[in-house]
Structure formats: C-alpha cells, structure tokens
Amino acid sequence: MQSAIFFFMKSPVFTGAATALITPLDENGIDYNALARLIDWQIESGINALVVCGTTGESSTLTDAEHKKAIEFAVKQVNGRVPVIAGTGSNDAAYALELTDFSCKAGVDGVLVVTPYYNKATQNGLFRLFTAIADKSSSPVILYNVPSRTGVNMAPETVAKLSLHPNINGIKEAGGSISAVAETAQLCGDNINIYSGNDDQTVPIMSLGGKGCISVLSNLLPKETAEMCEKMLKGDTAGARRMQLDYLPLIKALFCEVNPIPVKAAMAAMGFCSNCLRLPLTPMEEAHAQQLFEEMRKCGIEI
Image (cartoon, rainbow, N blue to C red; front, side, top):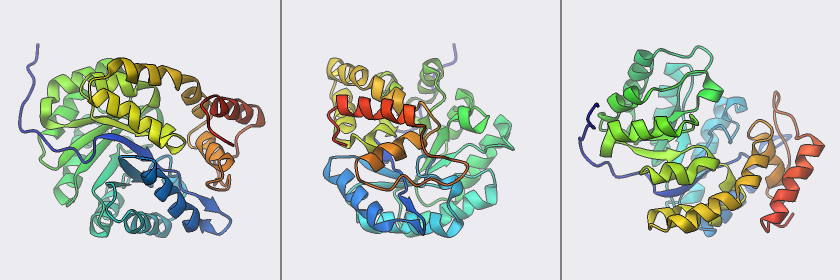
C-alpha cells in the first residue's frame, strides 16, 4: 500500500457551501441588476462562498469582455463578505493564464481551473498545465475534475503530485467515483482541500474529509445547503445525511437536462432572472420543467 504524503496543512479558501452561481442574462447581455440582487440574497441566506463564471455561470458562451467584467462586478458587489472564486479554466493554456492573472488582479480569493476539454491532455500534460498556472497565480488554485464534460479524468496520483505545490489549495471533485475521492484523500493527506462537485455526493465526500461543496443546488437553497455542510463539519452526520437524502429528488430534477438549463429555469421561476440561455443551450422542455417545479414546491420553494 502506498503511504500518504504529508507536507503541511493548507488553509482552505472556504469551508462549507459555495454556490456555483448562475449568470443572469437578457437580450442585451449580462443583467447586472439581477446579478447584484442574487449575490446579496445568497450572502444574506448564509452561503459560505461564491463561484462566478464557472460551468453553471455559462462561461463557455460569455465573451472575454463579459467574463472579465462579471468577475470584477462580483468582487465589488461581494465587497469581502464571503470569498469569491473565479472560474478561469480553458483548453487554451495561454488564455487560462490570462484569465487567472486578470482575476487575481481583480481581487478574487481563489481561482477554479477546470481540466482542458476537447483537446484533453495526458496526466503529464495536466500536471504541467496546473503547475504553470499555480506558479503564476497570486491567488490559491482549486483544481476542477469533471470528466463527464471534459473527456479527461485527473488521476488521484496526479492530484497527489500537484498537491505538493504550495499554491494548489483544493480540488472540486465531480468525477463521480467515491473510490477515487477516497484514494485522493489517502494520497494527499492535508496537502489539498477536497470539495464535492456533485450535489448528490456532498455528504459522502465530506465523510472522507471533504471541506464542503461547490453546488448547483445552493442557487435555490443557499441556507439549506450551507446548513447541511455545517452539520457535517460539526459531526452531525445523521442530520446531514437526512438533508442529503431529502433533497435527492430535487437534485435529480436539477440535472435531468444539461446543467445549467434546469437551474436557470428554476431561478427564473423564483424571480431572480429571465430564462435566457445562449445556444447551444436551449430552454428546458416543458415536461421536465414541470417535474422540476413540482420538486421545488415539495422543498418549500415558492414559485
């Protein structure tokens, strides 16, 4: 058996629940009034951190100018109340470095960097890419593993090598394999902070030492998602497990179509934004929308 590596305990960028925030859009671009209202509501509801311009924030269809302005806006609107983490990943290393540098200068508390997609990479390529970004970033780097979207999986051994870099602080793990998360935790020890990237695995991943989650669900339920994480952090496993299981039908409905189609429909129904998406994303099919709205009502969400 390979022994765990111990380097030093890295203070997490956040503990608890971070919302992978939607980006409100309209026919003119980003609706900044809606974004400001959403940010304030999230913080007032007790969310622990915010992630802007990630997958759920439709970063892939934002222009470069929109992406950068949204990050600047979020930092100013949050005004230090909770940590702000910017999505800065790309399959173009030069652009990922540019976005990371811009975000650091804008004042973010961390950057979330997804594995390269489409052109993918070998494990050596992943190691070299993330090392290059961490070397240049003045903010802590959170790796993002989501092979269902990118087509490439970051192996636990690669994460362990990267965890020795002092500026690689965490990983958002959305690979779906609890066994792989366990192996990552065993290999990395205190060298990296693990966050659940799948809402249906928050409690299982936190039971392996995860520090929290980066959540789609918390767009709708920031208070409850933060409470579930807090229960786990305080040792109330039974209470957290009960919440995890209670919200599973809603989580399933939130992913019955490609994210962020359902969560954008949900937030529009709650009055936070218009249900505006950019191609290739399209509005939710009516039958799926009604299923989602039914689950929202069961959870006490007014629409």
